[in-house]
Image 1 (tube, rainbow, N blue to C red):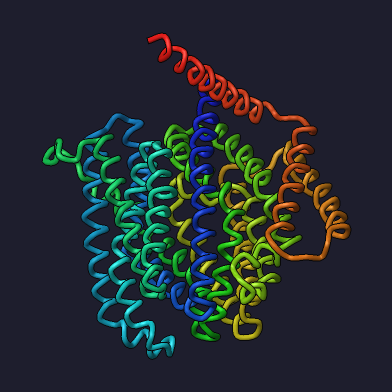
Image 2 (tube, one colour; image 1 turned 135 degrees about the horizontal axis):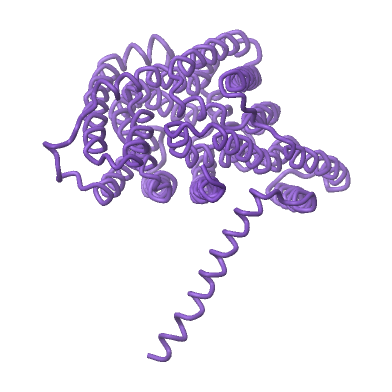
Length: 516
């Protein structure tokens, strides 16, 4: 690959990541508001019930997905690169039929066993109608995930972001406000959750149809069923483990503890979600490019993207990490006094997210380079580690035990994946430029600790805004003072050019309209 092509790939990832990040920040903000409102409307106990129904729905959708969403993202990206539109159409058909068939079966099983799950597993009869809501939502979530992956395979990160991070949370927010007029309950919150994903599906189908008309070439489509299913099965297995693992803690907290503990821990993870925005945005934008580079055999450029994007994730995560560690009580105060007990847990999960950011895109690199067996083995390791840590620690320390389990399992799997990529491809997530965000964060944390000693000892939004603004400004100033690297400068220059161009176009339009 030439230098111009390599820069083009980097800019493509940066553009996609910036679009996804903008959507994720918006989504994070509106979801944070929704979580705060629901927490205050419902209280820790009923909010815990709502989180349990959401967890069951996501776990069921993970089973229903069959791994087809991951297979579809790679399948569409590779087939589009080859100009194989017949293969793209056939792949979409296979993904849709497989996902809906499995989704409906999972929904039926969940509906039938709702009563024993609620009464025998959670000892909570109030969960029965909520599990019925989960049964309806499960195939909807699975189909939405498939369509988002398909749109990303076309490298339309903007469309995926609009559907997932703007339309879905906005509609959910409006539904919650409408239902709150009649009095908010965990059941009504669950209904709003499911309906909002249905609205997202309608928009995603429209986006896919615009890119590749669904009614054209239906009979001529080439359905590579064996290839798609062979690729998807390991990812289905890994995906089931991932969904169960991510939803494991609310379920175990509900089994071993109380629904109030479920609510507190959910608020902790919601508050920490901002730390995942940059990582998730870069990951989603990077995966199609990784698939193309692996298909082309360009390991050198793959390694360059691996190290560069890791530096970006660290630079974006570290200021958020400092806020979570220094003023967790002020952040949790937004949700109500009942949830400030999760401050220590928030500090711990912030360290887990830092470990995730500091090891970069090791997971997506393994996934998109077709190391299916390794992906599956890693999922087993992660799942076993998470289950063991949670089962041991939650009965002892409750919410704090769940947070420690997150830290242990996240750190373990990321170290394993970094070692694997070094053995396989001789690439690392760090290079000689990685010291800059680390040193900037170290200096910023020292100044932050000093400032907290001088500021009034008062919790609340004022202290949170003051600390987060100050930490962000100091970190950014130090990072820039250390000097931008060529890759960073390339992206910043191109973004500046785009902004100046947009500004010039905006300033000429009024003049033109006045002249007319």
